[in-house]
Image 1 (spheres, helix red, strand yellow):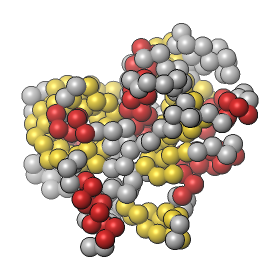
Image 2 (image 1 turned 90 degrees about the horizontal axis):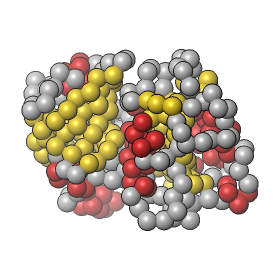
Image 3 (image 1 turned 120 degrees about the horizontal axis):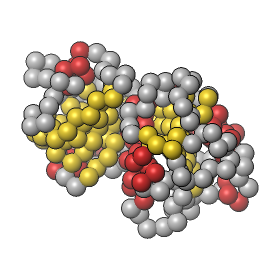
Image 4 (image 1 turned 90 degrees about the vertical axis):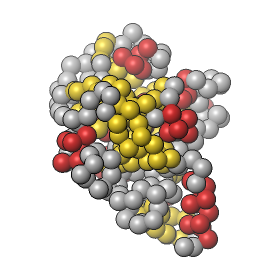
Length: 296
């Protein structure tokens, strides 16, 4: 093991736990999407926005599945997942009272800058949960944070929706659907889709974000920082948008992974460093990276 890898392993030693969690609630949404609430005190206490967990879907399945943490509430965490294979289908059969083995929290978090309080949160599909976590964290911090969430999905959104009362004059009045949770937190949010859902912007999240950014003055743009999570093509488009406006941008990468603790290096991606391009592990070196450092 290299010295850098040893340092990474030591840094995670007291913050990653193996814990038997208790399923408290499972909500099913259209499109085989599920939100699961799990009592997991150690994981909840150490989780930060951008953290994920590696969960055992079933005792008969040896490989775990990495899932982003959407929210921490007391000693509980919430995760969102969409059935894409046998493992997550088995996970969807869990019911309140069942136990679930959790390894986590894992990964480097998003790091907001207090001198850039206009935080633009861009999430797509199962990349929405980390944006919810960031929003929840910012609203509980001191400072003049003014986050804006732009979220996209081609499936029905896995959340309760409502017509927003929070004004967003940079987009038409007909674009008024929001997530109820963010509305309760007084955080403006607008939704984008190509599926024609009522009250949503017809287009990509980056198109909607661009509409907002074009309305800002140079001084206002200097207060903007972008955080994003979603499929790789979307993240590449977000990185391009950030470069267009010369804005700092952090992205949470999605990648297949086996161990999720840095041992197998199966989730490595190419990252620009001060010493040239290098392979970095999404699980422990990420999942959050500076967008400008990613070799897309």
